[in-house]
Image 1 (cartoon, one colour):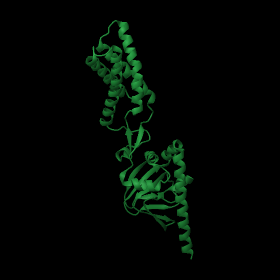
Image 2 (cartoon, helix red, strand yellow):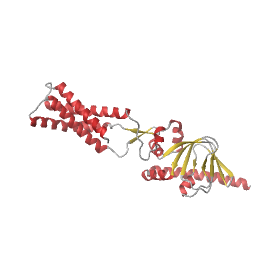
Image 3 (spheres, rainbow, N blue to C red):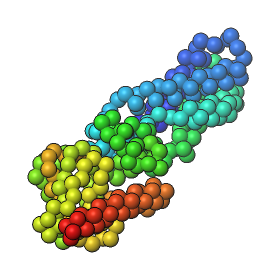
Length: 288
């Protein structure tokens, strides 16, 4: 959690406590005043912090999340404090309120403004501690799949829910590939796996055309699975939009997402089996 987050919680909590003391001074008992001030300080600080942090400032680039993915809105960073954390903080504020009354009493100053201020400050400190304990190294990702490819991704990555697909997208990037671009070259190392979202590519082996691939197909899965050079040359026949994965980044993602990795390997295996079947048919037809 950044110092800005902590500062917002502490300042807002303290101010709310002060104004509560001014408003309720002499109206309710000091203990009740402190409890009300603490709860209000916690709730309002949480709301203000959520509003500020979700509306101000550009999204940062996260480790493992290319900035291009943020531009394409494949995922969005959820900066809000979860409601359950605010609820826990409201409960913890009761302890802060009690401490505020004790401190004011021992100091000999029982001003309602002081009690409210201390209650707001102590409650803000307790909330900050809870936020620090809750905070994780990377922000929570909330789903927002690219609208243009949403249905295609869902239909191809069967077995994965939307959240898993969104996490998978973090490991790759969308590229627009010009007509005539070579995606893979036969017998040359290939460190990239392509998933075609739009357009067509031509596959040749030893100079002979063997297949045409379109959206929903992978390119480079044999090289990815075997870690050997490409077995065919693949060239874009028109403008192609593809989801591109670098081997190192995808393998790192798979180490952290074993369930997703297993399903992706199944998809690649089925794709490879289908291509082998089609290739065998072409070979048989040529021999005949």
